[in-house]
Amino acid sequence: MKRRDAIALGLAAPALASRSAAAACPELRGTGDLLVIVERARGSLLVAESTGRTVLGRVEGLGDLSHASLVFSRDARFAFVFGRDGGLSKLDLLERRLVARVVQAGNAIGGAISQDGRLVAVANYEPGGVRLFSTADLAPLGEIAAIGADGKRSKVVGLVDTAEGGFAFTLWDSGEIWLLDPSEPASPRITRFPGIGSLPYDANVTPDGRFYLAGLFGEDGIVLLDLWHPEAGPRRILDGYGRGEAPLPVYKMPHLEG
Amino acid sequence: MAERAAAAVLLLLLAAAGRQEPARIERSELPPARKDELVHLLRHDCGSCHGLTFKGGLGPALLPETLAEKDRDGLVVTVLEGRPGTPMPPWKHTLGEAEARFLVDLLVEGRVP
Image (cartoon, rainbow over all chains, first blue to last red):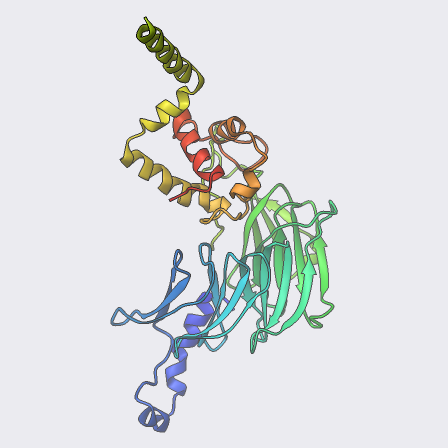
């Protein structure tokens, strides 16, 4: 579930709220205008509303958020936060409290929620791989070690949920795209596409869920995989798009955003 | 006579100190405002790959225990020249040698403010 999906669902939610519930609970509100602000150095999150631009509260105890990312639940009530210490935290935006938290790895970079809303997948740098958890209570459901074609464990980047109910992610060290079918989370099916290029730093999926795109740091191009036709394999697009006439130093590892 | 000898020894010591550690003398001359800028760069530019707390990201950890075996001069060269074939860029267009050494010392000694 991507952020834009969460916002769209949040906007639709007030129409579903019943009048009697609103009368019984004056605090009743939607989540469509909520936003969260990561307080990197203090390891906390602020929950704010963007209509009146006020801070509603702070949630603490989220560990090392020096590099944090988050995704929202299908119903846009909960945020799942991935932290630098491998922490995975589930946060209730309305009650502004921590619902569940596990430290599931040494260093996590991000994650995604499956289209059916049941699974949250976490991309880990240390140890390199993906772990699957229940969105309900963060119970561990499965684990995939990202051991590349070179036989070594790789850091994982660019983890997204796909329209087919699975996940796609990219192996930084060995340069591979993997598709994950989590129908049986304890023994997920993996489809591997090795040799996509040097040092893919991030990846993204188009809003229609069809095209998975991985950016290469070590080469001047982007890798595209058509998730409707994965059997066709990844192909290179936009070769030579980024560096101009002379390669210049890159001082910050970029993100790839759509 | 003894006083003159002592003064000569002192001069020799000062000269030796100057020859051995020119970088240290240069480093102590970094103005406080520049040091603040360098620490900010360390946290937010170096930290964007190596982690705000230097425990590693896509780049390796830069904690005292991970750097303990490394040669400081070699680390300074890495900062200035980068590591060809990896994403580590050369910083010599932004940093002088004394500035790179100031940052290396902070990391190796675990003294990043």
